Image 1 (cartoon, rainbow, N blue to C red):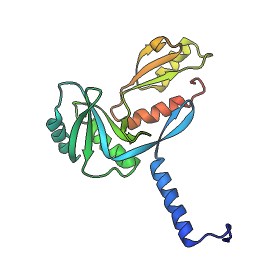
Image 2 (spheres, rainbow, N blue to C red; image 1 turned 90 degrees about the vertical axis):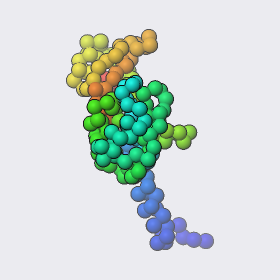
Image 3 (tube, rainbow, N blue to C red; image 1 turned 180 degrees about the vertical axis):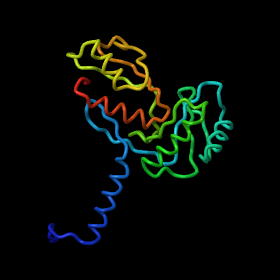
Length: 194
């Protein structure tokens, strides 16, 4: 029987690989009801939102190439206005994703650029310009408005959204989804929100 207190070189290499892989995939997370949830990055794609009628697939591919983003394929995705862009070069972490999204967001016709994440069903998911937040019971309407004015970059599209008390539908004015993710996560961790 093997002594469980002793680690072989192979065991240590496997642990190092697993730790490195976990760190690489844990670079992105979303806070949901105060709990961080890891997001698994699809390193080969980004999602782009374009106002309807602004750019078609070939024009979008050309506009991205003019910014230094080589796309192997640009395909429409639902809902309308969204495009999935297959990249020639892989995204290698947060800095790489931020650089690519910043370049894409600099194209005037592009309203929003997001990394693509792989959800638990192995299908693509991405961040949209809208998010929903709910305030705690003790936070007055006046304080909700003040907190959003101080900590949100964008507009409140609706308060008491869909008939739910203290729920706000927000739209970011950021064009890079990583700015939205940072701001949303910071807001979600505040005591005033549920």
